[in-house]
Image (cartoon, rainbow, N blue to C red; front, side, top):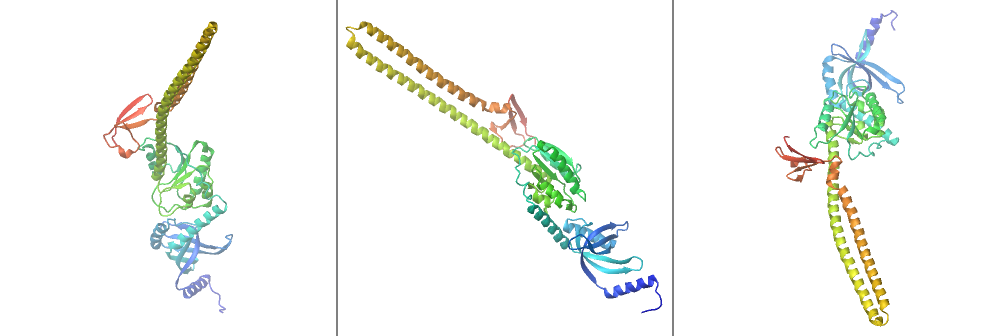
Length: 434
């Protein structure tokens, strides 16, 4: 022990020498980054922390330096490997040296980083969110909703200026089948720290008008995937899982699914794929409608033929029955007449009158039966007319034909073909240019 007092600089120099002597090597450490700052020279300054097991307090904290020559290589390497921005709030495994400066004190100088550790931590976080949603019984709620047969009314959550939103809109507007979609954009921030807050706000606005929409589409254009962490939060996932309308996600990345991809009704790779899915739904509905039309028309023709045959057979049956009855009555009358003709001439006249009346009644009955059958046939014919193609066209549908045949698939049409579009009040001739 020295009796002579030391200056602060001398003491700090001793500490620096001791640290360099005791900790001369490089060390891999696990920590959470709580703060990231980059200065104009390209040097990055971070703060490493370690939380207690319950996460409600700090166990350790240290300053970290990443010099510009290292940071310029380390940052893009980390973000390309993980799809995660190098920002506060992530857990990392970094290679450091231990330093002590007489003026700035204790710090760690970062030499390398292991992206695999952060990827594992991110995957673990996703699993914990999904496990919590499953425990709460809401993880599959949105998947259990049914997308309407004709999903024309679409609420879109996207950035207004995003290329993906433009691609999605163009795909719907210019679809080759001419299907009409009604889209409403609910702008949101689709990258960075405000993704969760912004998308939840858009969902709340849609929920207020949910009766006006069939589905919700959340889309984000292509480009870097380093800003997708905002889609991996519990609050956003819980909102999407419990949303009362089916949610389709097309966030524009293929490497990993975000949490909202996993709990949404349907996940597609890109915004254009989301548009293609909606167009396919409309095509399926159109095909079903065409099948119904063909079935109704075929059934109607069969019903008409059956009705005609039934009426013909009924007319024959009535005619034969009437003739047999008249023949029997005449024969009976002849027998009565022969028996009493000599003494009951007056009764003969009365009997003849009775037979005549009976004949008249039979004729009336036969005519009445024929009229009833004719009326029933007219009702059948009217029902068939109501289901006729002309009445279906009157409701706003149309048929497109090439060479007199209905077109069901765009691949059957080529440039230069002449098409005939049949409407309720006429026809439209057109030439295919594209």
